[in-house]
Each structure stands twice: as structure tokens, then as C-alpha cells.
Length: 491
Image 1 (cartoon, rainbow, N blue to C red):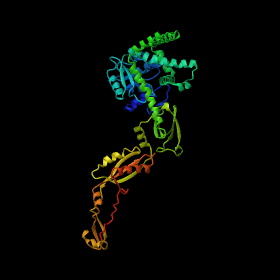
Image 2 (image 1 turned 30 degrees about the horizontal axis):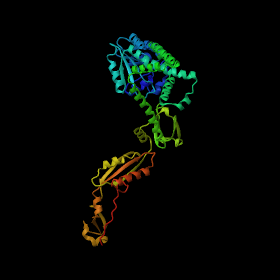
Image 3 (image 1 turned 135 degrees about the vertical axis):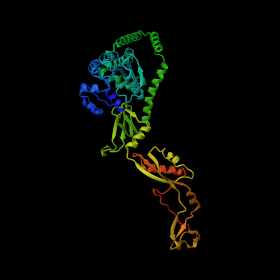
Image 4 (image 1 turned 45 degrees about the vertical axis):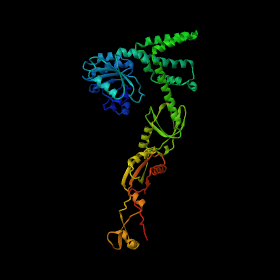
């Protein structure tokens, strides 16, 4: 979480320095921030000091760091319990140092603070200056802020984390005791069971020391355990004696206490259906160009989706700028649980920024009275285009232009001549009625940029067909637009 919030504060313009007892300077290098090699100097220079260490050493760390802080600065902690850390901050921080208990209710795998809950525990008389600043900072990032006391926090979290973690871990250890085949059971899975297994696996796959300390350091958790174990024993007893009515009675009582079970059903349905919808979208995208964001590496993989299974996908990666020749047509397998499918706009942006594109100019005479921008908007509906713009606008055929022609060729039609006479005369080109009408039309050159993974000739043909369908007449594809005329002779 220290690394997560280093990035958070850095992105918002703060100068961040990190320190850890392990002296892992490579983490600081990865985050592109200084490592506090001299802690005695770094702490007094800082406006905010945040303690983000294991629960078991939080008080010890506060006792070591807090006395070194300067007046007017702020001391915060990111701990899953609040009573003990807040008391330690009150005890060891000098009177001129403000303190603020903080508990981000999410883990470091979450990509953004938007929509996440952050609990703040201000201390009367010790949070006046900095509390509104930190609260506003998190709110601007899109976080939901809850303000409470240290005692209420620990009481609520004893259930929010203490009970839920304990129940999930117990399910995991029970499965281990039964020597149950999880992988095979997923073949018989219901949506609820599948999601429950994922949450169990999520907890079991994280730092077990963290979860042990969440259970052991919050004094309210033991009372919660006792209630949970008693309910487990009672429900198990009712099952053993086949007391259906008592079982139903307890379940109904729990539902009344729970409150809006219909709301919970709708929310869980939404979660289940979103998973189904995402998988259906992926299945329907086989054979198409798709993009996937890898949640943990941060990399984006774009290519033709060759195959989609329950657990993984196969992509033929697109060749982007700077791609080595041996990568061309490379197949890559990716685990679905690590991926988020890019939206249409995200995929479009990636393709625009990372592929080598082709540019073509299409010059047309547009219908009389037509708006070039409206036609441009119609062209831009083609999803194979990275961009389309108007590169030139000019008047149509100018029938008033004079062409130099030989007198001998025109002497029988002398009435059409104007200008000086000589070996060559100026001939006023009247043109046909159709040519005179076209002279009133506006000429426009549309410059299209075709995505590098599309056939440029085919896309150009599609755009040309669209323009013709809108009443445009295609002209020579030359930015100077050479005019071609034939003198109409009346012999």
C-alpha cells in the first residue's frame, strides 16, 4: 500500500520520499522517487509522514518516527485497526504535529481510488489544518470518505474484515481438510459458487501474515469468532436432527436483521450477469481485433482473437511501432482472470497511437449547397479510419479560364475569341451545360488515415463509394487538381 500511495501522491504533484527497514532502494528506483538513506534528515523535512507497515510493528514505528517530525506537519497511518495506532500517534507525536488515522478499504491490486472507501479518524485538536486537505484530496480522486472514531472503526471492522476474512479462510481450510478437488468442482459450478470460490482464493492468495494480524490485533474479533462458531454449531445441530422448521426460522430471522435482501439479490445478479456478459462479448469477438489490459503488469495486448476458453484466450498480436521482425504473427496466451477487455474507444486510441498508418487523399466535387463538414462526419463513421480531415477546399471548374490555342484550329469560330490576336489567340471556353453546372460545385480534398491493421486500398474504395453515394464526383487524386478540358469545336 505504501507503493500504491507513493504513485497516488506523486501523480498529484507531491514530492515523495520512501523508506523501509529492509533498505530496498530498488523499490524507490522502480517508483522513480528518492530513498531516504538518512531518515534523521528526511523526516523533519517532510510535511506529511505516512506509516504503512505491518500491524504488529505500527506502534513501534510510530514511536521511532513521530518525535523527529517538525511542527505543523502531519502524521498518518494506513493500518487495519485504529485504536492502538491513534493512541500511539497521540502519545509520541509532538504537540505541534497533527495526526490522522487512515484506513484505505482496498488492496494494492485495485487500479484507482475512484469508487473506493477510505476511512478517516481525525483527532479533536490534532487534525485542524490537514484533515480537510487530505479529505478533499481523496474525494477529488473519486474516493468515498467515511469519518468515524477509532473505537467505532475497530468495532465495525471486527465484522467487516474480521468475520468475512475468518469465514473465507475457514472455507479454504475446510476444503483443505476434506482434500476436495477445487479444479474439478468448477466444472459443476453455479455462478454463486464460482464467485464465492474466487473470493476465498483471493484471500488465501494474499499475505497470510497480514490476515493473521487483522484477526489477532483487533480485540473485538474474538467476540465475533465466538458468535460465529456458536451459530455454526447450532445450524449444524439442526441439520443433524432434521429440524427443518427451526432451520427455516433462524434463516428468516437473519433475513429480517439483514434488511433489504432484494437489494442484495439485485446487486449480486448484476455481478453475475456482468461476468456472463463479459465472457459473451469475448466469445463473440473471436476472429476480430481486440485489446486486453493486463491488470497486474499494466501492459496492453492487442491482436486478432484466435480462441477464447473458460480460462484463457489466444491472440495473434498486432505489429506496432518498433516491433521486432520475429514478433510478427506471434501467438500469445493470456489468463482471463488477469485481463480487462478494452472498450471500443480505448482500443481505437491504442491503435491510433501504436500502429503504422497509411494516408490517402480523395478529391471530389461535392453537390451544390452541400456542407463539407457534414460529409466529413459521414466519412468518420468508418471504424477503419484513425483520422479523416479536410486538407483542401477550392472552387470548382473555372470556365472563365483562357487557354492558348492555335488560330488555325479555331478561325471558323472566331466569334468565341477574346483578347489579342496573333499566331496564338485567347479562346473563351464556354463548355457544356453540365460543365457549367459543375463549375458551381465546391471541390474538397479529404485526407484519410487508415489504421495499420487494415487494407488501405479496400478502405479507400469504401470511402470513395460512400462519397459517390452522397452525390460527390471523384476528381483526379492530385493535390493541385489538374484541370482537363477539351475545346468544343463547332465546324
